[in-house]
Image (cartoon, rainbow, N blue to C red; front, side, top):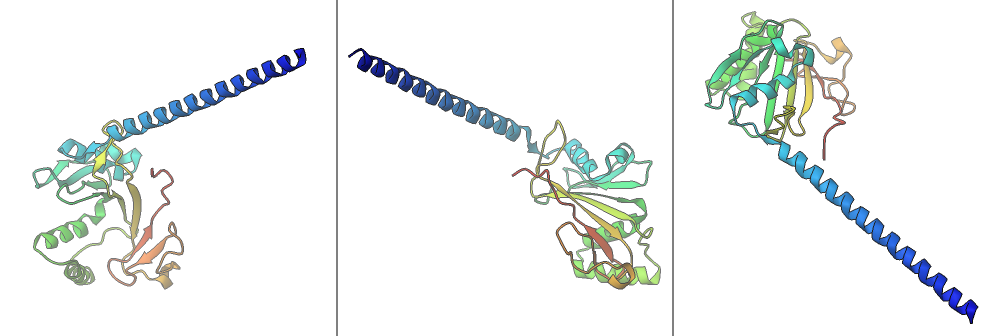
Amino acid sequence: MNNLWSAILIMAIFASCNTNEENNVESESKLTNTNEETINNTSEQNYVSIDNDEALMATALLAAPEANRANCKVIGYNMAGEFVTYREGTNEFIVLTDDPKKSGFNAACYHKSLEPFMARGRELKSEGKSGAEIFDIREEEVKSGKLSMGEPGATLHIYYGDSERYDPKTTQVENAIYRYVVYLPFATSESTGLPEAPIASNHPWIMNPGTHRAHIMISPINNSKKK
């Protein structure tokens, strides 16, 4: 009889321990989920709309190399829809802000020698010319020597994404990524050794070969993109 009661007591203690462990695991799981939800909600709350000129300028500068941002010239549309110079610069870069009237986010930074080419494109676009018309007009003007394409190898940095929100503390735009364009007017696959289509998503290739707008496309893999 004593052995029977001892066995029953041991089973009761074992069952109690299992129940406590299950309760602890469940509590820790709930706590973990709550913490994750809190972190996600906090992260979500950090993002706000790009809805003022200061935010437009701050986010546009992210397109420039970090070491050069302090001295870039900044131009682009303001919230009133006017194309303005936000500030003058002293280095080789010009930064172009996102157009707040368009969906998504698209800021750019380019070598100052490309400004005649870029400015001519904006001018023709304001006249209502289509993309194909702008291409043909600039092609003819570059060939005739009327329009400069800048220094060979001049680079355009593009910082873009679908979101129009940013974190004002870091000025990072939600899920934005980079792409680089290196202009080599009239270059071809034969003259550069580059393919005319990417071999993989992050491999360089030549676009618009043989034209004034021939350029090397480089799209880095975005390992930091949040899902």
